[in-house]
Structure formats: C-alpha cells, structure tokens
Length: 103
Image (cartoon, rainbow, N blue to C red):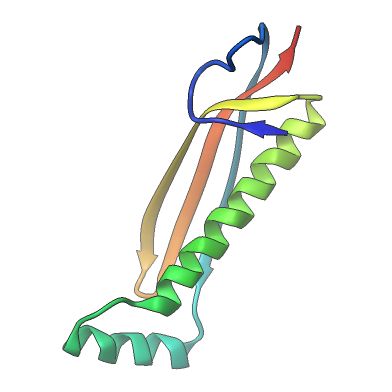
C-alpha cells in the first residue's frame, strides 16, 4: 500500500474510491502520568507522551490502511493527521485520506 500526502502519484492514473480514515484515543497509565507531570516542573522532553503519540499515529494509520484495503485500494493519497487532547494524559489521533486504485 502506497501512502502519500500529495494528491497524486507520479506516473499513475488514479481512480478515486473514497474517503478512508482511522482513529484512536490513547492514554498512559497513572504512574507515567505522574512522572511526566513532574517533568513539567523542571522542563524537558516528555518521552512517555512522545511514545504514546507515536503508538497512536501508527495504530490510526493501520486502521486507515485496513479500511482502504477493504475497498481494494492500491494507495491512499492526500493523507492528513490531526490530534487533540481529550483529557489530561489522553489524546485522540485521526488520520484520513483518499483511497485510490491504479488505472
């Protein structure tokens, strides 16, 4: 499966199949949330939250690809990611794009 953020794939004529998306809401356990809160006091990178967001993006992307595969897509173009804080220590990630088939 080809995944791109452009609306075309060089050298390919595309048949649009429709919008596909994937999303997830991720959180860290309370122990990690407390340690990351303490890090806020002294500053620096919040590695546990970076890991959480990486996992969330990967899972949301996997779900989008599965939806595209169900449509028989060869690729997903015009991919966009969005994220939002749902509550302290929890974030939603959504990814969407257009499923396409090569002509």
